[in-house]
Length: 595
Image (cartoon, rainbow, N blue to C red; front, side):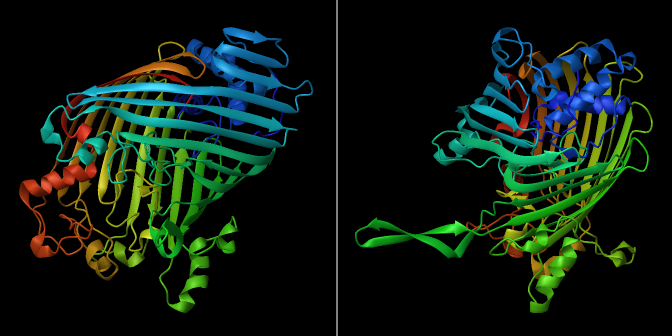
């Protein structure tokens, strides 16, 4: 099988975790070598690496060999061939229309035009003592490449949550609560369920997701316009740099890889602020003599870059920075890919005495120099001053760190162990100006637990045969005192002892089983036990601490803050969907065609 040297830039959906897991396994076993900090990978990169691994057949187990051949069949166009499917109509050279796997593939005789169309269909049934939810989705995806230098792709997924919630009336107070009870993802919920922007619906939650793009590419890099989720970091669950937890956003992207030891990634994104701009509105004619103002959202943008150096094989060192800004229009300075954005921000804002924009710096390290073992770490600096490192200084720098390991195929083949620890200081990711927060659609773009929190994750995974996957996992999420970012109180806020009073905790034990029947079609089940509970802090409250809110969303004054069971109920409803509150045994079963 021969691959073109040209880098096709159609991204592989990050939700196709099986192929991403195989790539991580092959890199960890030192069969292939690549930078795994930036996702999604392009489909041709995956095809190239799998083909490279297949050429080292003596290093592969029987299961790995079968999995590589299985995934390369799905990547047939990237290999300049037509896939071989189960129920198909094909001439084996230029087209393939199949029912299993459902898809249409076309390859022009000169191989300068490639087209792939796949349907998207899936459903999960989720059941516990609170009731039953049905999550269903459907849509389609199209991918095309033209003259080996242009890629175009697009997909749409219409999704919904609905079902019977509230078997016991005590879980709800109003009809609205019943409708929102099915919404497992909300900006304030401390879980890793992908963020959603819901449409109007009188049941559960209805939403859609469009991912699309166009890119120009060559062997050493690409530039494109796309709408997708980007993940920067090595975490198997939620990176503390860019986790992809928020809904996908449109962006301009740039990738450069001129030599094997250096890679550069950059994007400029149009975020969703969810903040109305009082000076920007339409006038709507309600009646002949009545008009109304329809306010538009405030602008919000983000620029970020990441430079990855490889001093030796299997060792990656990355440094990057980003800025979230909310000017009336995009700023040309932030389209400079290799730039220190905080310095540019000072140039454009300090002279007027206005508040700076929100900038960040981050570092990542990854080593697979010990065969089978991947060790990684990342640090996200929201703000940093050296004097805060002194023991005599009560102030703490707002930052987050994450460390983890992935041990594969040792001491037993087909078995892997993953473990990760994340901890984030007070005020990290937060801002006093809502438009500048490290969020999009109000969902955090970093680790889903937010500030003054920690997360422990451990998993044992077993792959006995091609396509079959088992996982036992444990997740411990803890949230400590919650503070709003009040500008005049920020010194008092970051002088509080971090990780002082526990206010929310969720322990989850889970068993997952998945079997991929044919490419992009799999059945899966999940059985989990979780215990989500809230606590009332015992320390004295400060003005900026969240211990209850007024009806307008502002913090209660110190003398009026909630206590005891009322405060526990407030935290539990704020951080956990009703469906998972308390102790629950939850069973999920589903079938998926594509993603």
